Length: 344
Image 1: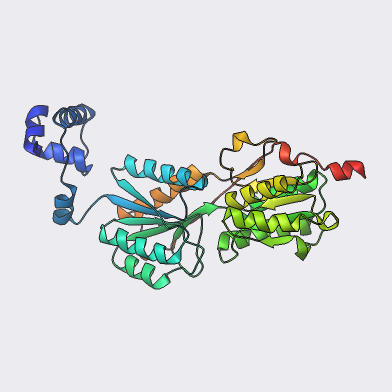
Image 2 (image 1 turned 60 degrees about the horizontal axis):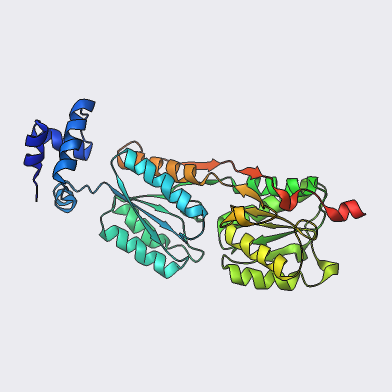
């Protein structure tokens, strides 16, 4: 196994220069960096990160916990975070909580035992382990919440601006002539889901309309459950909405399946707008109108904040950073106009 001295000899530099390149601890000229990196590749040298971390108390490793990596939104968040980490010489461990509070607690303990220097956390739908998180932060591990922001936890956080993002969807449906607009939410234990429901109410009130409680359908992020619920709600033509807004990708997919299972068409029978792109969205016909979150930027900005805290850019007693990014509306055929309004 090659040693750091052999790398230095091959590159024609001092051992300390190789260490500076690997650790990013001291600036090194581009020409020297290229020589060292070439020697590392030629010798297939792998630094002993475990030994170095025991000596320096630094692992240059971050962790990120997300509820479900199969939801298309979260891989973009992870990629953004990884790019920001890599740019500063950090690696990123990504793990999946299955949206389970017990599993989330296990993963927080696992990442702490792996001696990560910071954690990005999208909380699960159940109770947030506030005591455990406070212990982790007291141990010097920085934490930033992404996407799902828990209540009563004063930490840095980055997410979309949920209220205005939901208003984009409802304003659009109203402008297209839709009157009976249902909303299908995820679990309302999550703050971001409650904020999106608030945006729904505010957009209707601004248009001089009152939300019909029969059109507020609380679901979860299990597509099959949402499909079954919506299929039942769409059964009665007299009470059927003429448009549906789903507040996350899995519920959006469940709504779309329920529409198809009920023999209905979108937008002719029921218009549809979803929050987040659906899986393999390009295969859906008609294409689905979507509120698009800047997922990559959310992950990137969250990791940047975390790294600033780790590297000393933020005082431990400083006020938490609260960053809310705007969403955009990608209008497609599933919501373009109201056939019912035309018929009337």
